[in-house]
Length: 323
Length: 255
Image (cartoon, rainbow over all chains, first blue to last red):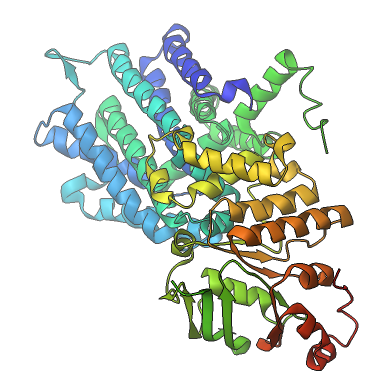
C-alpha cells in the first residue's frame, strides 16, 4: 500500500487542505463550496470506489438535506445542530429505501433504478411546491449562529463547515478502515464469493447506502445555509451527475481523491466560466482526457508522482521473491 | 447426533425445463471422505450448488445433522457449518492472501462486520484462524501477496483454504486439482486426506488416482442421477460405471 493511502496521511492531507484554502482563495464562498462537495463526493466514493456501486441517486439525498434545512430553519427556527442531525437521519432513511430497492438488480439495471429514483424525487419536489417552494425553492435560509452572532461573513461560515468536514471525513476514514469497510472491498472484488463465505452482501450494500445518504444530506443542508436558498436544482438529476463526475475525476481508490476531485472541478469551473460562457464544453474535454488517460483519476496521478520521487527503487521488484 | 452429517432425499433441480438433477439420495457419513465422479454434465456442480444454497432445489430435501436446511439461505448455511471451494478459482484478486482468509474466517460471524467502527484487527480469532490455515497450506512465504498474483497451484490451495477458514463441519471441494501440475496434485491429495480426519469432506474430482486412493465412498453420477455408489474398489469394477465412462477414463490404480 502506498503510504499516502494510510489513514493518518489522509487525515493530514485534509487538515492541510482546510488550512491552505483560505490562503490561496479570495472567495470564502468558493472555499466553503469546495469543502461541502468534498464531503459529498467522499460519500459517493464509499459507494463507487469501495462497494462498486455507480449510484445516480446522490442528488436525491443532497436535495433532501437541502430541504430539511430550508423547511426547519425558515418555518420553525429549529437549532442548526438538530437540523443537521435531522438531515443526516432522513438522508440515511431515504438512502436505505432507495438502496434496498435498487440493489435487487445489478449492473446496468441497478444504475437505471437509481436514475429512475432520481427523477421520481425531483418531480415529487417539483409537484409538492407547498412544502418545497417548487421552482422558486425556499428563500431566506439563515446561517447558523455561534454565541448569538450569525456566521454571516464568508470565512466565519467557512470555519463552521471546515470543522464539520474534518469530523465527517475522519468518520468516513474510520468506516473504510473498519472490518465493515474491508468487507465492502471484498463485495466489490467478488460478490459471489463474499456471499459464499457467509456475508449477507445485500445488508452490507444497504448500510453503505445509508452512510453515504446521511453524509450527502448533511452536505446538502450545509449548502442551503451557504447560499441562503434551498433551490430545486439541488435535487435535480444534474446534481447526481455532478457528484459522480467529481468522484471519477478525483479517483475512486482513496477518500482524499474525492477532495481533489471536488476542488479541481469547482476551481476549474470558476476559472473557465470567467473566460468563456461556453465553459462546460471545455470541461467535457477534461472529462474525456481523464477517462482516456487518467483512469486512477487525480489521486492516481498523485500516487504515481509520489512513487516516482520517493520510491523509485522499490517500485519494480515487488514480485521477485519466491514463486 | 446421527452418524450421517449431510443427506439428501429425492433432490431435484430444474433449469427451465431441463432436469439437471433428479431424485438424488445421498448420505454422507461424518468425518468420511466422499467423492463424486461422473462425466461432464452429470450434475455434480449443480448438486454442490443445491447443497450450499446457491440454487434452489425444485424437489426433495436436504438435511444437515438431521436438520432440514432445504430453505435455508446460502450465507445461513455457512454459519450452520457448510463451506465450499469452487471449480473455477473465485478469490478476491486485489486483496492479500491473508486478507482473503481473514474475510473467510470473519464470514462465520458476519454481523460483527456490520459495525463500521470495529477494527478488523480487533477480531483476533479470525486472524488466528487465517494464520492457522496459512500454515496448513504451507503458504507462509506469500501471505502479503495479492491473491491475483499467486501461481495457479497457490491459488487452488487458497481456494480450498477459503472453505477451511470457515471452520465447517462439512467441506465441499469442487475439482480441487483442476489445472494443477503433478507436484501440486500430490500436495492437494495429502491435504484432502488430512482434512478428512477432522471434517466431513465431499469432493468432485476427475483425477481417478486421487479418487480411488483417498475416498471412503465414491458416488458415480450420470445425466443428473446417481448411477452407482460404494467403496472405491467396488465402483471401479462395476460394469455400469465402465460403460458410463466408455471404459477409458478410470485409469488410476489403487496404490
